[in-house]
Image 1 (cartoon, rainbow, N blue to C red):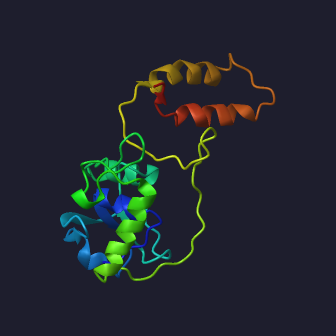
Image 2: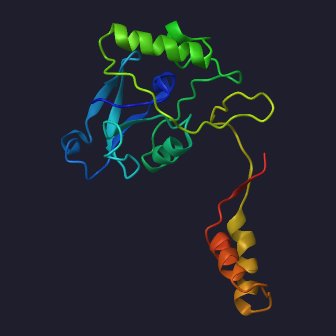
Image 3: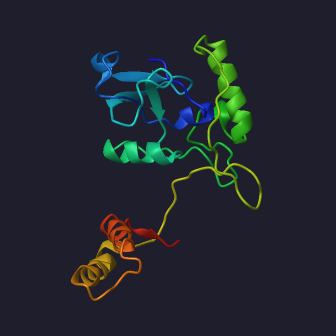
Length: 193
């Protein structure tokens, strides 16, 4: 199964390949396993609403430990979170030995070269996408699974919702009540670490 990615180095931490459940091209592959190149590790082919059948090949690699969207897909499908980076964005011991200790950008070049050498690189094309940049260092920020502490917001939101719905809390202009309630009724736990 052919996938497109803007982050080839993170494929060493992939947990699955995802396809849209309505994509007839791949329906026969859902539930089967494929072998992750360079790692020779079997990973499942899963059906999820996240992949866009019109984008790229329609199949996407899922790296739950290093992408916000992939993290959510990984949670929905109970995928393993394989952290491949250390605190300095160098590849760690969770990748094949040939890539350990490499900076993420050097690893990217080496992964692409290895894929090409093995005849697995279909094509390379320019693609514009958003990358979160650190205000301080001006370098790309790597999503990384780590231990976090959260405030359970649902319990805090309940009395705030009740006081708004009771009319004791007045909004000026009144249209902000809907925004307030939408936010509180869909609130997520708040990360405080």
